Image 1 (cartoon, one colour):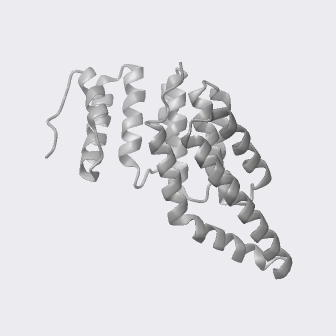
Image 2 (cartoon, rainbow, N blue to C red):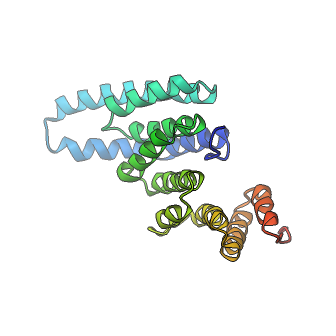
Image 3 (cartoon, helix red, strand yellow):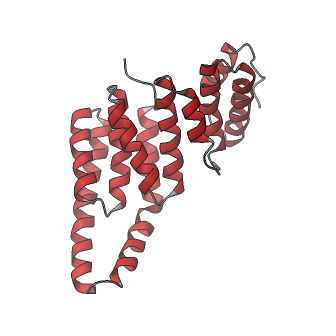
Length: 217
């Protein structure tokens, strides 16, 4: 049985697409400007253009394969993007995709390695937070809830408080810390409700602890 690390395949795909649409051009531009001062502009411009265009095509195909559930193809193409285009933002996004299909197939060693690489290499803190939360979920599934808590508590999850609270609730529940789990779930529900995010599954988790708060209007 695959580990339930990702809430839904659509969530993963849409999050990656939206992030690239919002940040891709700015990130690539920053890379170009930063390195261009160190080498000849013409040579570097030609290299970046070719590399970026090829990586972009590969990543578009990767997203199609992910959406169609072609796990083996996603793994192979994703690892190739990571190896061949590690100087582009596509490598980090590909690592998230590889981690997803690896977790789905219970290859947790691969999933952990890819998520850790995102945490270590991603320039965007948002991607780091997503990877860290997913890594913590894997730790919980492997019977390491205490390590999951340490991982989540190592940073300030600005903008991702509710996601972290939910996973911390899972970790506390696994440890038998009912009060802490309840508090974490309640914070997560409050935050997600405010953001208009569906909390029905979270409320089921909270109900299993013996407490179910009233839904906010």
